[in-house]
Amino acid sequence: MRRTMVAGNWKMHGTRASVAELIDGLRGLVLPNDVDVAVFPPQLFIDRVIKGLQGAPISVGAQDAAVESGQGALTGEISSSQLVDAGCKLVLVGHSERRLILGEQDETLNRKFAAAQASGLTPVLCIGETLEQREAGQTLEVVERQLNAVIDEFGIDAFVNAVIAYEPVWAIGTGLTASPQQAQDVHAAIRAQLAQKNSEVAQGVRLLYGGSVKAANAVELFSMPDIDGGLIGGASLNADEFGAIIRAAGN
Ligand code: PEP
Image (cartoon, rainbow, N blue to C red; front, side, top):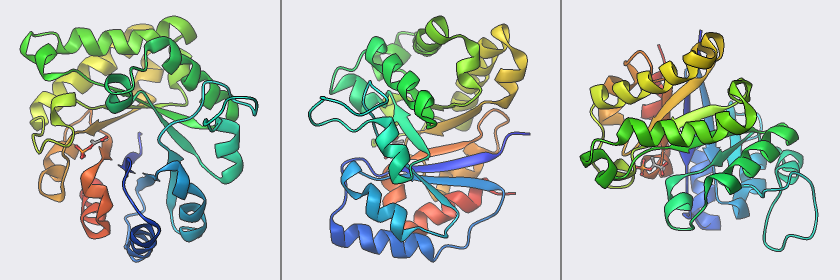
């Protein structure tokens, strides 16, 4: 039985003051105990968020990690082992903003994915199509290709300790949400692709939906059989809204 997960990606948002307020808000939430909750603050605030959330049932992850797991000469980067040392449990890999704005390619993302697992972090692999790709009928092909980039290099067992987030690029931060059926169709295709290699891994891996999830649309999305929770951007910056989304994922 897969545990539902709701994770908040704070992206490049926050000041010391607003982060302190958000931590207070998160600490005040009454959370269902059948949902795993995580937040991904900007690296700058990870330490204070981990300290601020001590004792709360909320994991902290990073939005990115270096291609190398250990320490070394790599100016500006933070390695997955340093994130583990700080208390992180998860890391996003391949968010569409990094793929499309920063030009991260599969080869780099695979190194980050492997470094994360080598350090004991759980990678959350983000995949999804652009609007042009959807309109050209290429959605499943794109998602399959992004997933195969990992499977071809590391094998299906790479997903024993990983989470997949399906995030259609056209739905991220746009207010447009995939309909529950559109999202379910892609999630089912992802699970079927994994099942071709190993059905046990496919049944165990959590598939999160991301793209303008709010309290108002969360229940319908999370009720779909292959949607195991959500990766939430904008709405995760408001503790009350985030709390309502988490409760929508509980039973
Ligand atoms: C995201 O960035 O992962 C995301 C899903 O953003 P939003 O919820 O704001 O669309």
